[in-house]
Length: 513
Image 1 (cartoon, rainbow, N blue to C red):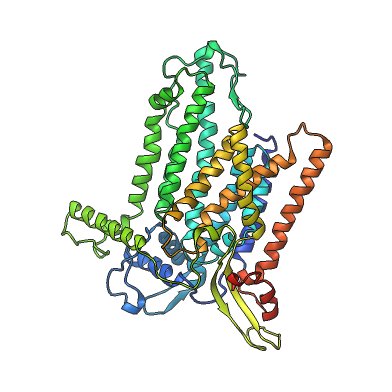
Image 2 (image 1 turned 90 degrees about the vertical axis):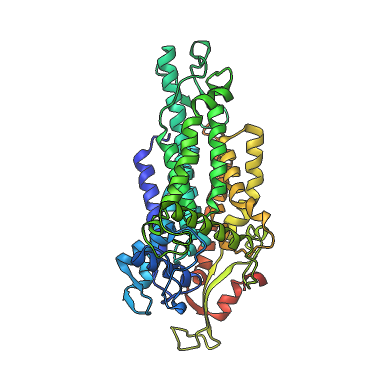
């Protein structure tokens, strides 16, 4: 790890502070509910007051509501509504409702910046590259907009980022545990340890005197692996789509177990991993996520009024049957969701920002809302990513694939698996109604892919001064472009009142209108 531990923390916290200021500044604007806040703010209020979701306000809030996403994200919003304010079923406002239903999103979006910074620092063993990754996430428009609206996707992404961080920590921790047990078994000195972070990372001192005997040592409870499963289960408790990432991370963790035991001279590394690592693997990636997901529904189980709660009668078994039937109805809803929508888009278009979503649009005339343009003004919240991140990040995946193919770089594998499990499943539902903000979970992996290539551009510490200088210029200029593009698009992402002519020049393509 880098030796600048204090500087690393200060830089990480400074980036998170910048991200936090951007996300919390004028968080309550625009006033009132916009876009899908109409659903989730009401659901969060229902959970806060009843423990289950009520029917919508138009239906009088007089019975259970059928909702199609698990409750954890709405519980987080309910907590911030309890702290700061909400609007009740009669439409009466209490406290500061906009702050209430958006505060949790801003916290999650800011936390994700801090966690990705620390995770990238650990992955690439560089505070500079860690901060580079954090800067990209902090100045991405889609992450910014989702951090300032009371809907679920930012909680899903942050849960996956936390799981990613725990997975990387578990990889380091597992190899350190294996090295320590090999030292104890072989009697070698303290130099037997995990060294390096690239494709040639190895356990030194793993010669014939430290070869694994039989299946090798058990590595203990693996707390970071358990935490990874917990975060994945929590992410599934926000949206089901986290299940795909769970499968990918589980497969990756097992592959890393096999690789670690092969590096440690295991004669049969797959059998060794199956014998010694699979039990805690199964607990972490099967038991813990299922229990965590189930726990997010606790409000439905401990109350009596939830949708389908007593459909099969009373008692624990009837409740379980009702809950499972509820899940099947949710599945059927998603399976057959194909309603038309002016901002619907297909997954492949997400990578090029083909159809951003206008969450809010107003057209104040001169003299209204601070508009001074005779031709009128525009005020918009457009959910759009930073083109420098999404366009180049998509291209960077080719370089990341080359890194994995040529070096078997574990970091490249993590980027590819994370991106693939967050993106490819959507291609299996071509007729389903989908939107660009569904792509938010892809963003951390695009950021890490760009960071990996930035590391290649900078070169190793042993590279020539000219190579390091050119690489630094390329990476530095790119980071500046990312920030400048964020500043350029900021007015149409933060509901700023600008002349309509200024709004039009930011609509680069017809699909952005």
